[in-house]
Length: 253
Ligand SMILES: NC(=O)c1ccc[n+]([C@@H]2O[C@H](COP(=O)([O-])OP(=O)(O)OC[C@H]3O[C@@H](n4cnc5c(N)ncnc54)[C@H](O)[C@@H]3O)[C@@H](O)[C@H]2O)c1
Image (cartoon, rainbow, N blue to C red):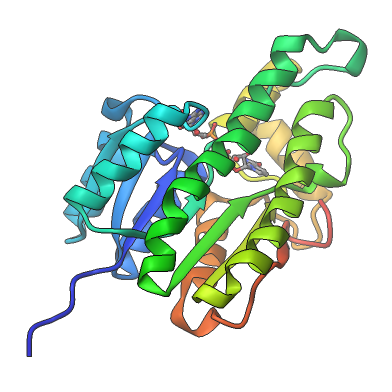
């Protein structure tokens, strides 16, 4: 009996951080993975890690906020790897500032990448999921959705993604497609390193201080989030939809 081809997953923002760990994990779980980020060349490390472990990966360059680039990217994934039936909307940026100092551009970029980006990617991929009668969508929210000083733009986008997720669950459930969100707490990545730098903090001290406030007494790592994605996209999680799981070492840190 010939083996059926691997299901295809797309992970956005997968050049580094949480996206890279998720792409590697989904490949280890048996998916063929499209490793998407702004610059195709930046995804080489993730692609190599997947291939070195015996998995299948495709490097894809696209700005998730650009409708034309998103459609071209999803078409390319479908043609070269197969129809994408798993989508992880992970690409993200921060442009933190107190409200009175936040510029129009800071607001618009954060909305564009998180909200418009997740919308465009999901709209382009859902057709393949509906055709297959099976799909999994995972959106990256954040504990910042509960409110966070200096992040009016980011908190709004991350809360918006929770409403987006629940609506996808309602609209797409009948086609065998689930949609869930993960709201990470403090995870050690380039994004949080940049935050420490911006506020003039030494990285190691900043991590230790954050960890001290987390109930499980450590900072998160990208693999903590990848593990939760792996659960949501698994076959057995087909009755779990429209949920938001806070992966923060506690209820909201
Ligand atoms: N690190 C944390 O503590 C934390 C906490 C909560 C939520 N998150 C969310 O998790 C996700 C990943 O965060 P991370 O910490 O790994 O960040 P990161 O900055 O390390 O990686 C983000 C990736 O997204 C890519 N990206 C940015 N804009 C893009 C665009 N327009 N199109 C395509 N790719 C784009 C970047 O190039 C980068 O590779 C983000 O959505 C972030 O908001 C992170």
